[in-house]
Length: 183
Length: 188
Image 1 (tube, each protein chain N blue to C red):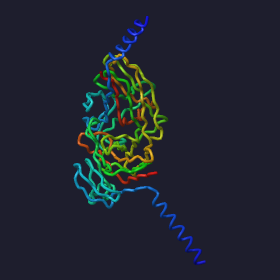
Image 2 (cartoon, each protein chain N blue to C red; image 1 turned 30 degrees about the vertical axis):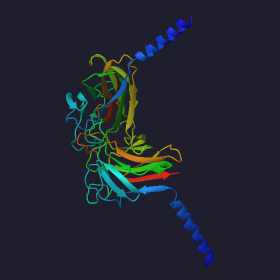
Image 3 (tube, rainbow over the protein chains, first blue to last red; image 1 turned 120 degrees about the vertical axis):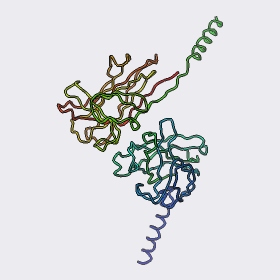
Image 4 (cartoon, one colour; image 1 turned 180 degrees about the vertical axis):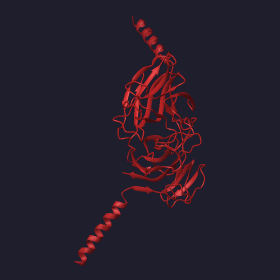
């Protein structure tokens, strides 16, 4: 009986291990290095190194959705670059990207994210989709985007804040989750 | 005979090459950076894209049931095609090809339906031609994006009017919020 239970436990354990190795990288930035200002800079997170452009990640601002949820600025006008987070590492065979986000408490909206991928180390980016968030900021929005990439292709990922442009850039969003699934 | 064919071919190639390249450009208006207008009666306001006439429409950042601050709020019609609140551009858009309008029913109002109607004018707003009515979500949960295309090969200049075509009500409280306006135009 004991042996049987042990076997089952081992099986469950190995199953869990296989599941955990199922090529999903989940990034919440909860254990990332802090960055208290918006100008471009690096952040080291559990998944690797990220470039934060017009974005910060901080643990002591009560108006963030939660501590260490990256806060990303919107663009001043439609012609300008929006704030973004991008990986400085490539993901081989990237299948899909799931993003959780929410409008920053004091900003008016609308709120919207765009996910892009780059096959040339960040020189050019291809959009794989956009998603609009909730106006009432009552809860997060989760959106999943497929990359349609080849199995052996290495891709970088960029999450941009393409909320309504506003001259003072105060249509910020908090990113709550980035999940990257590979083949 | 072959000489005629070759010269005809060259002619057609040169005429294709002579076509001027046009680029698609976009005007995006959210009214987030527009001046406030806290009352409904007709008035011109200045937004990032230019001047707009707001008639039976307002735009405010005062706390209200608007979907968001600075989303224009348009009164509904009193009866069919009567006194529909609207906003219209005070400028012409040369080469206009696409109009996209995001809208949603006003949170406090109950209406059988919420809708927008978009018009264009080629004579500075004297005469307007309707491009059609698009209905939105009657539950007011989701915003609706109404898209209109214009065949504009001659790259003519148009003014645009966006009117509230929701259910007519004597108190006009079938209001809508405009969430976003995009114009696409071709420029040579």
